[in-house]
Structures are given as C-alpha cells and as structure tokens.
Image 1 (spheres, helix red, strand yellow):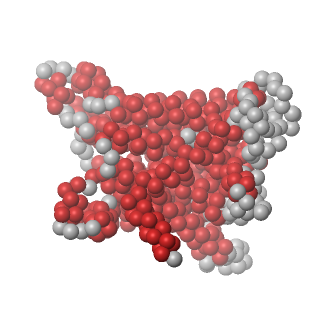
Image 2: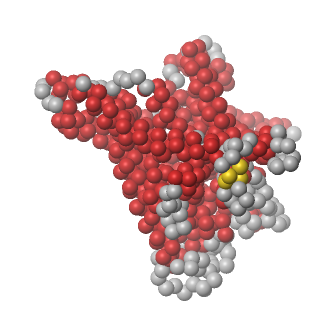
Image 3: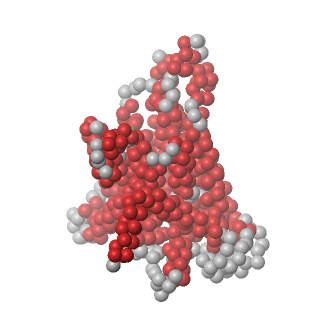
Length: 284
Length: 291
C-alpha cells in the first residue's frame, strides 16, 4: 500500500515539474505524426491494405505522373493523369494571377492607410477585415449567386476574382505591419533633399517595404493555392483546382495514390513556407 | 493637392474592387434570401419571407413548413465550435507558455516548428486523419495489435472525428494570438509575485492568466468562427452522420438547388458572426481600459 502511495507521489511530482515539457512533446506529436504517416505510407508497395508495410516503392509517384508501372489496373485510381495535371495547371495560373493583383491592391491600400490621414479611415479599417473574417462558405455562395446573376461564366477568371476579394486583406495586413514598423524619417529626408514623390517611393519606400511585399505575396500565393471552400463553389466544369480535385477523389474513397500527391504537396508547401518565413524575418 | 491625388490613386483600386466584388455579392445574397424559390432550381422575383420562417418558426405550414431541425443543427454547430475552442485552448496554452519562456533564438525556432505543418494543404491534413481514423486505419491497427480491442472501433464518421479534424486544422489560429499575448507579459510581474510568496499556481492564476486574456479572447474568436461555418470537415470526417450548418448551406446550393433558402441560412450565419465580432471588440476595449 505504501509503495503504491509512493509511486503516486512520484507521479504527482513528475507531473508538477515536468508537465509542460511533457505536454509540449504530445503537442508536437499531435501536429506532426499525421503528416509523417502520409509521407511514410506513400512509399508502401502494399496494394490491398495501405496500412500494412509491404516494401518500399516509387510506384505511386510514377503512376500519378503517368509512367507505366506494374500496379494492377484496379489499384490505380485516376483514370488519366491529364485531369490531375490540368487541375495543377489551373491552380498555378490562378495563384500566380491572384498574387499579382492582390499584392498590388493590398500594397496600395497599406500605403494609404499607414502614410495618409483621411476621413473614412475607420470605415476602411473595418471593411478590410470583413472579407477575411466572414465564413468562407458565405463568401463562396455570395460570389456564386453574384456571378450567376450578373452573367459571368464560371471559369478560372471567376476563381481569380473570388480569391482576390479576400487575399487583398492578407497582403494589406503583412505590408501595413511592415510599414508601421518603420519610421518615415528617411522618406521625409528624401523629400526635403528635393526628391519628388515617385523618386522617394522608388528609392526609399519600396526597397524598405520589399520584404513585407514579398511576404504578403507568398502568403497570398499559399492561401490561393490551398483554397478549397470558395473555389469549390465558383469553379466551372473544366476549371477545377488541385484542392477541389483531390477533395473530389477523397469524397469517393481513400486511395494510396492520394498519399503520393499529398506528400508532394506537403514538400512543396514546406519550401514555400520556409521562403516566406525567411522574407518576413529579414530585419529592417 | 498632390497629396490628395496620391491618396486617391492608392485608395481607388481597393475601393472599386471591394465594392464590385464583395459588397455587391453580399447585397445580392441578402436579396436572394428574400426571394421565392422557383420550381426547378431557379428563383421567382417576389418578396418572400418564408425562407426565414422555415428556420425561425413563422412559416404558416401551407407554403413552407417550419422545421425545428435547422435550429437543432445550428445549436449542434455551436456546440461543436465551442468544444473546438475549448480543446484548442487547452492544448495550445501550455505549449505557448513553454515556448514563451525559452531563449530568443529557440523561441523563433519553435514558433517555426509550430506553424510549419499548417502551411500544408487543408485537404492533405484532413486526408491524414482519414487514414488514421478509418476502421482499417493506423490507430485501429495499433490498438488491435497491442490487444487492447478485439474489433476495429468506428472512429471515422463520428462527432469525435469531426472535433479532431476541426481542432487539427485550427490549432494555429488559437496558438498565435495566445503566444503573442503571453509573450508580452512583463517578467518582473511574475518575479514580484514569486518574491511575495505566491507559489506557481497562484502566480499563474493571478498574473499570467488574466494578462493573457486578450490572446484567449482573440484565439477563441478566430477558432470559433471558421469552425461554426465549416462544411469540409464534417463532410469528410463526419460522413452523413454529423451535420453542421455549412453542410445544409452547401446542400441547398448544390444538391436540392433551393438557392434562396441557402442564402437565408448564410445570412443568419453571417449575422451571428458579425454579432460575435461586435461583442469581441466591445469586450476587448473594456479590458484595455481596465489595464
């Protein structure tokens, strides 16, 4: 009995002193293990049950890119890789275009809000957060109704328009925090020394906020690449994006090929994320 | 004069864009919620308040019937969103506390580690949980192997699965505001409390917790709103068993094609969200006055 009591006391002391580190380990396991499992299983050659390890293979990767493999016809889920590649192509076109448009609009707004005083500032401040904070589904269906009512055909153009409505706000937040963090003395000095406003912007302001602009652009690229809900509602028949395409396959069942696609997407997003964090961490 | 011109140039793109492609759509959504659904998926341009009646209870039973099921689904979504907030708070707070006490270089590294998984695609993260939770999935295989259970548990397509999914995708929205406010707490306050004889628990409840209130509030609202309107997670991890308000909206748009009714549900959802935001701003400004 006393031994049990001692053990309990030990456990209690352990929890008291080591609770935080222990919790942190569990936390990181919770956020990392699911993704690691996906990457691990994408190399599993077991066709029947993807949970049972049956040897290492690159077959799933080969099959999503359309190379011939020894896999059974049944195991290969995608009828043709064309659909996948087409979705990927759409995604890249959409994200690149939205990034350019929303970076321009968001940066302009950030310059106006941080560097100028005007009457409707509070109103703009509320307005800029609204597209970000209302549920995706509300924005998605209101854009769907709007496009149908106005008579815009659902295509990659409608998706681009839809993405920009909320991505401008993300760019705005990143760029304006960069702008607010730097004082305007250099700009004033340039103006005093006779540089006109365009010259000052090109030589002083722009180089200084460039990391912020890059950070905002990368963020909007990632979000646009990954957006599912809004795209789901406003994508036309032949304008599916990668997330919508994969969502469609997942709804029909779990297939090992998705592991390979998912792993590639994880690797890709990690590279973009590392780039983004690098740009954001650049000191003034 | 030149300054005004510059300002106009900088403001115009956003103003035009947001008016045409955001305020316009929201207005049309509002209009649609008061239109009569047509027979084959279209709309009739008549004023028609029975869409709201179906949900809130004044439908007369002749044209449209009041069905309490929508109200129940709203309540259920509230419940799930609230539980998601509580779970994310409980798992993020200790981690944020631990990271905030590290050396600056390590802090940056661990923050990077926390945010990294969430840059991967939403569908990928949910797919990972599908293969973990399914009857022949990793968790079941593991539990069967260590003989803890005799037959696979049904974990996929349950409310628990939906909760796990919501928590998993929304962790950073809780973590980052929490961390930001915990990090800001002046260390001398904690030392003062310790010097004056407060033990660790008292210091936590009297100093750290109250001072991190803005982070708790901000994180909660950032988790609550996306989980309330979510339909992807219940669709993939809840199957047909768990319905949230987002699923009903999606179905009335893409399956039953009753657009006015879906618009009406979306408007109610939006009103709820904006009300919550209003109270959030109110409470926060009150708190900042006290501090």
